[in-house]
Length: 258
Ligand SMILES: [Zn+2]
Ligand SMILES: [Zn+2]
Image (cartoon, rainbow, N blue to C red; front, side):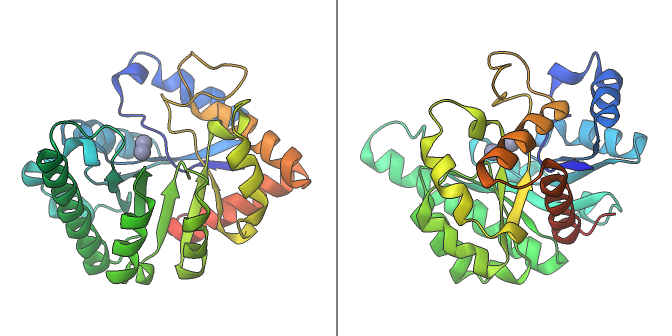
């Protein structure tokens, strides 16, 4: 069995055929699905799916692209739900910063404030973190360590292959590997993959985004985690069933699911 640890099933691009998407995945051994929180406006849909399907779980969180949502989202209303397995995705994303230097600095400060607030919630409610980092490795790592986030741990989802983050494996952090590993230009990730401790590897799609080769350009879906597992098997020289087993055990441990 494979667990898709990061799949935005609440995205409207799955609305018309969600049953078929899940059925196809299950028939191919992808049997658990975790919907990360991202945008406060779709949390209702995530909850609805988690209540409808036994094998769907959700997380509650605010993405650095949706900082305004932080004030409107009532974390406490969701966090006690039996299918709520994590806080996130939250983190820092400096990739699309715009404006003057002052505006960029203000945006960074706001991202840090809201990331920090979510780490505090994770520690308060003893939930692991789903962490989104883009072009912000140093600041993210510093915040995670300063805040003692390793107490609850979490996943660096869509791990960006930055070696600076590797040491977080020793602080109870996992590394989410997705479709990027199948891309022809994924040299950096291909090289760093063997350096990640096996007991810290997870598989994800980040669907509907980051569709693996050879389906690039189409909507990503949980079924395609099998392509990620195949590629990891090839790169790590480990039998694909073993890859599925070890990443499943890792996900079950981190998110406390069966
Ligand atoms: Zn993300
Ligand atoms: Zn995501």
